[in-house]
Length: 308
Image (tube, rainbow, N blue to C red):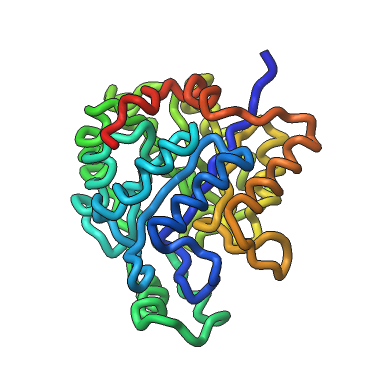
């Protein structure tokens, strides 16, 4: 059977602040519409954060997630993937609450502690709608995004016991080895959904050699027991997707990872980015996976077995 490519769309996240784009989904209704639009455009999976609707601040309050996850499930067949990353300012107990309580099919899991430098954005943006935005970016000069072995094990056990599987976010080679450690301990079983992340200051870069290196390392560590996907931050989004797709990879796009739809053009919707990457893939004679095909590829429990 011809392999099909899974498109994930990360609808909104902790990286970008409301000031940076007027099109970033903030309210529950905006996140709902963005997610449904992305699935209709061809995304099989939607990766979801929540935000305080008053000021756009990232939030892991499960009540905020409940305002949109059920409606998304009702309106489309997309796989709902909830973050356990939240933001570096949150404790691990805060971060895991939505996935633990709502029991989604899929949840993200960061596979190692790292510097997570967003402060270079201060050179491009001088004025902010809310005081927290500039403070948040400035604070990343001196913050470590904490994901210790204990943190990872806590999330695996508390969220995995309900049948949720994970999108393992690996920002550097060591994160792949961390994942192999948990596989060796029997806490994680394949097929692994490995999301290799390129272009975050503090993680691996965006050169084609970086992509090949991450793929070779994953091949050596996990053999045929993983499904490989990539995301490129900012302007690297589409080049990374195209490069990896040519090597058999799956792709992730969305306003969490990049606000742009081509040079100098802010993406007005997440669906625009899905449409762009879908066109790239189809022009490479690759077929796009439906949500149910993605469920089969990742051995997910199905949308009827969640707690929303």
